[in-house]
Amino acid sequence: MAFALEPYRQRAEQFAEELSREYYLHLAGHKGDLEIERIYAEHSELFAPDAVRYLRELSDAAKGGEERRRLRHLLHFGFDGLVGAETRAESAEIARLEASLEIEAKEGAVSYRGVPVEQANEPDAEQRAALEEARNALLEERLNPLHLAALERGHELCREFGWPSYAAAFAELRGIDLEALCRQTERFLEATDTAYSPLLEPELERAGVPSFGELRRSDLPRLFRAPDLDELFPAERLIASFSETLAGMGIDLQAQENIHLDTEARPTKSPRAFCSTPRVPDEVYLVIAPTGGRDDYAALFHEGGHAEHYAHAAPGLAFEFRHLGDNTVTESFAFLLEHLVSTPEWLRDRLSIHASETVLARARAIKLLVLRRYSAKLSYELELHGTAPLGGMRHRYSEALAEALRIPWPQASWLADVDGGLYAACYLRAWALEARWRAELRERFGERWFSSRAAGGWISSLWRMGQSLDGAELLAETAGRELDFAELAVAL
Image (tube, rainbow, N blue to C red):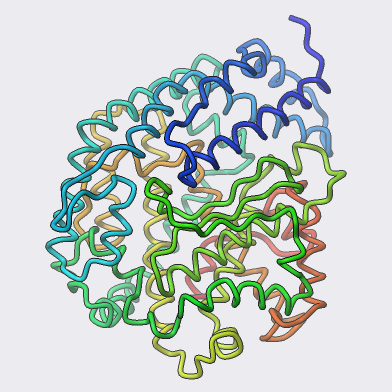
């Protein structure tokens, strides 16, 4: 077939814009249907098997440098798109059901997507468990068959293209040694095993949720919500604190016409905060669904880190470095700003919280829980996406998460709790990279680096690079350090 690389790149950018905008409109609650099948159909030539195979040939033949990076990112885009095109019917139906399904609760109907928000604000543990049970029943009956069909087709496509497994495919496409990362997470789990329960127990009591032995997954939204800290994190300071933090770094949020902040409540709005990027750096959406308190602040600052990273990308960068690349990088900047909400200096300066020990203890406990959860998820997902049969994976999922977190873990979400393309690896590497950014910022600009225009200039210089380097390369070039997730056991 005839294949022209530059027109392919142009069409790829157009597709990325249309798809991102469609997801924004749907997940932000502006429209009920996710009309991605039409978008894939209009750009079907991008994901034709022959086109993807040719991209792989070009990537394999490239000798190195910028062009090899661009081709690998483009191959990742093309193969992801092929998987997306082949499973678009399932994805659209999953999105439709998630936006339309409801469960009955004591106060009336609750939307499927709204269950975590309801649990976060529900003080009664049994009611939280009932919400989870009802949600899991819908997940098992209506959604899991679709998730399974999509997963099996994704696995088939990897084998059709010559990879031994889905895990092997995405290790190559992401340029990440997943087995080495898994060994790092195993060391982290071992190193934090003794500290885990003593760190969590006092915070469970303060949050008013059951202790270990009675704690269930349905209680975690309440723990993360931290309602006992609400008075310290007033709703009226949420946007202002973010804007003032950026101003301290020399960034005027109100003057950033390319960033659109969406905090409006809508019935079908996703409870999971997100950043949507139809056109980088010209059109970026920062979307949150407020539930109140500390968790809102963390969500806004996390997604705000994404938004600022994309909004600062140099317009002249290649499409592959503005829209694609190693998402370890953008996630690291999201975690960097999110961590401010758990920093004593920031709490004093922005929220006048002088006795911050309770806030910091809660943040450490939640972070350790999340890091251990994702460490277990990576191990599970490498098995799920490996060469073993899927038959025992439901049990393996529940077993792996329960062992790491010491919480009985429902099997129902063994498929829904899996992000495509082994994205969990990006999160894990991003947490390690964020810790290094913090160390660099403190060393260069002091503990209150968030009030330093010079620090803002330094971070902006990294943001302008988009994702032209992967996380490990960017760290090596900036600080001369290696990226190692296991080091977080010491940093907590």
